[in-house]
Image 1 (cartoon, helix red, strand yellow):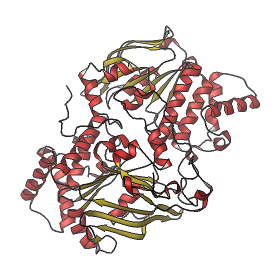
Image 2 (cartoon, chains in turn brown, green; image 1 turned 90 degrees about the vertical axis):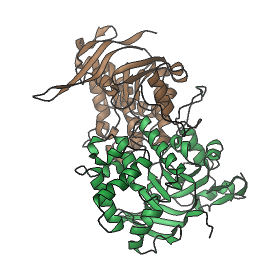
Image 3 (cartoon, each protein chain N blue to C red; image 1 turned 90 degrees about the horizontal axis):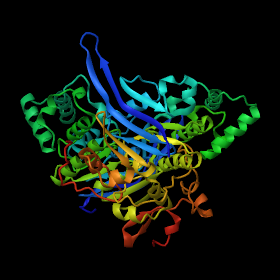
Length: 270
Length: 332
């Protein structure tokens, strides 16, 4: 398998204040590679730099240092349209990701515009129906509606359909299941796995839930305060963690299949 | 009446009423919570979990109306008791409620101790001496495993987990026998979640509280502390029984589907099968379906389910209650 994204020595420092500058190092010297057609999870608690890395990869945030290559080329050399044809995102809150003044059909229309394809209305319609059926929502039920008329799960699936139409090489999913009912989460995760298997999509899955990371990913990266503390094959890292912080996180994850010993003291982070 | 029971609910109905119509959010729920039990209330969103919790407190929010049924908290019939007695006696020493997102209910311009002073004045009706209050609150915070100095801080100086733990500490100042917590762990990091569950466990172990009613959609977290579980669907109780039994051997079709849809961490790393989510979404409670409310999504629905609402059947050998026609004979 070849690498699609290569990140080397990535740094990001946020600064604030006018007279007295204060600096926050959000990402410190992070390097990783994403293999084509794999699902890689980025896990960590709040403030660990997960979303910052996602924003930098999406060119929504400038990095302080380091290099990022997509298919061997530095990402700043890509034109905007070219880049977003290859890299797409699904955010946590589907309601705020869609303009609620317009019917949701417009979202898919814009997807065609991004691809720059000249299609007739009939061809568009057929493609839209095909994509919606792939994400298991009934086209007649959602088309022509406004975002607030759909449930969170439906909208999130709808946004996956949009990604299907754009056919990017990599999709970044930032906490996409956290606003969705626990009973519909498995469906969304299965959908991403299907896309990986059938279309060879690369997925960067950002989550704080190690259970979901274990279920969906091939590889995992554990972040703590901007440092990449442990990375590798998901089962190896989660079953036999080496770093103290990974061990700590695992000791805090509730599981249906094992019970905590609540008499035991919580090990403090090292 | 058994001495064991701390909370008895009989055929409780509570509806939301407004210009939108009547939402039958809790429709015929019966439940008994005994001393020492930790009961989980689980289900999808919009199924009446929080509404049930709110109805038990006796002071539901404006649009929510108590309709029929009985709630006994110890010997007090909540909706027959004088509101003054409810406020000063029942809701201090017997039952305490920590609502959803309550960590945001701390006053941002007040130190925790001033907030506590307000709570004490509201509950006891008299202003307390400041030194006594500091002593009382400080001791209590220490007893529940928090630092004494937390009471002198402003909410913005505390992390989310710390705010949530402070709110739980404030709610248990008079050692209530029953603590109702609504989604205390959502929107927090995993380590803070564990600390909150550990705090609840220790409060029960140390005798500060006797029983807990834990409302959450996260069954993995619930399974760490609860010994009973109640599954709600569309305002109805669907299944009630021992936590571990219900995870291992769910009976109701809905519970089965729900357990099969939960993405949970597996310490052995051996599970390979794909999970399945429940198709469709819960019905609108403005106009709930006739018969069993789950029949539209149920894989085992029969003709009868579309017209007749099943009663709650007791399966004696397993100490389980199931609201489904499949268990009419009382056998699993």
